[in-house]
Length: 117
Length: 109
Image (tube, rainbow over all chains, first blue to last red; front, side):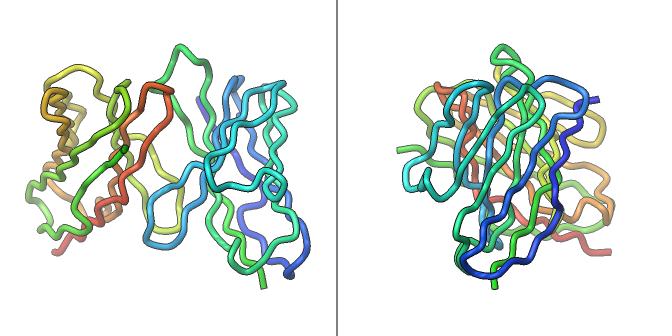
């Protein structure tokens, strides 16, 4: 159990286009989903925390108008990178938490590698 | 500020034992996590410690000392497939994970 999927697993796009990444919890409901970004040889950087039915909370330095997050249901959160530029190329990873009470349970998706040309 | 420190890289021999240390300073504390990450893949959960002491899980064990802000991950009977990055993360008072930069473990035959 506790499987999280991401789609697509990799994407190449042209500069200036928008890319949507989906994160789904397949066999549980996730009250909270987290979006991370990881550059090569660096650790995970939390971008935002999204709770179902409410606005996402963005970390300092992350532009909310550029990285649009929608947590429309308890099993789906989407991250849209708008007007992507080469510096947005990175490994984007989502994780899902079943409930606020189970803080030690955070399940990661397989990640999405974004390359912006 | 919040800070997680762990060695950048370690090398060990197949069949041996290796200990990866982690020190943390976070605003509040709700547990210490260890994750394994192979290149190009997402992290996979290894262990969670919230009380002091040693937690053993097969070949992997994790230790926590809250008073010292210190944890270690102990890997026994190393196998080639254990070559990966090992990420230490502390959960702060807001239940957010603060991540270390990871320790790249290289296993040699």
